[in-house]
Image (cartoon, rainbow, N blue to C red; front, side, top):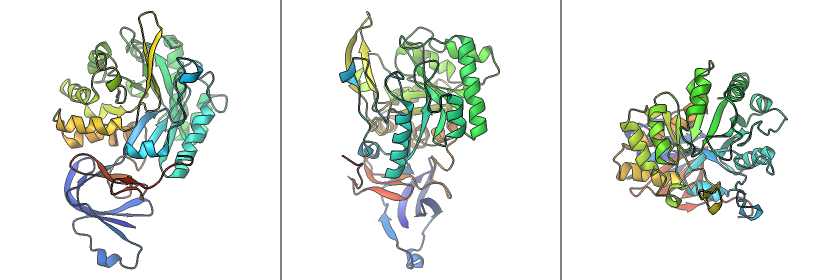
Length: 387
């Protein structure tokens, strides 16, 4: 049992200075002045939250947890992500995906990494499939993966408007998304389709055509990399009024001349009238960040980190003057709502005790995942096997 005293609470909405009690992996009480003497019979750890902000743990909805890459050949494949990298980035819940390589990599490996991260203390789910259509799967049918496997919540990332895409027709895309939607209904999941958005002109057009020629809502699609260049960013300001937008945080430092800085993207989307609830931010961590020349040749290959989300959150608040509670929604409650992750994304009674205590410089002093203390006094307390 853990009692956090006198912290500034963001649920993500700001509710003032209060005490919060964790027990059994859950938030069981949020009050002003919880009396610790009344809890003497329990194994109680009291943490002084004075001058600290207590916020929900980050939910990162797009991470290549089992490795990715390979566009530059066999030596450019990234390895599995480390537990400590996620904890360092304030991530308490992570959604894994395969990515470009659905040919030599296996969705089963993503599933096993999800299971491993759960054993190590984080919460984790995944998308089945990859860039390719038809998508690879675990059971031989992506709809059965979604309906039957607890850890699988949707399909993705399916590549559109990209030179690495399978370029599904409108009818093929409709079929993919409709089947994922039904599978999600059967399994009690979001059944959402995560879309890799490429650099092609009019990048949202395949989604728009699919919606206009079917009964599908825009909210069954979850496009990411919506800040990758100025053209997609401007189109996203219009698209985001109807559907979801995911901003990629870890690639900006490597492509500052092309990409819109994530903290700026959050500000500008809101100013353009995109509903805050439609905006999320993911790191795309552990994925390769390739740069191609005009002839399609690979020029360089970098790798993103989960810590990019927290950095951009800080920059959005301090540099772009977006309210703290607004920015927090993009990496907490918005993600939980879109992906139907129950008991996640909020500091609220009966929710999972996933929380971060941040100091004035947005450094993580304490991090809790399902009530377990994984960072204490700025030091990571647990690392994965073989780290």
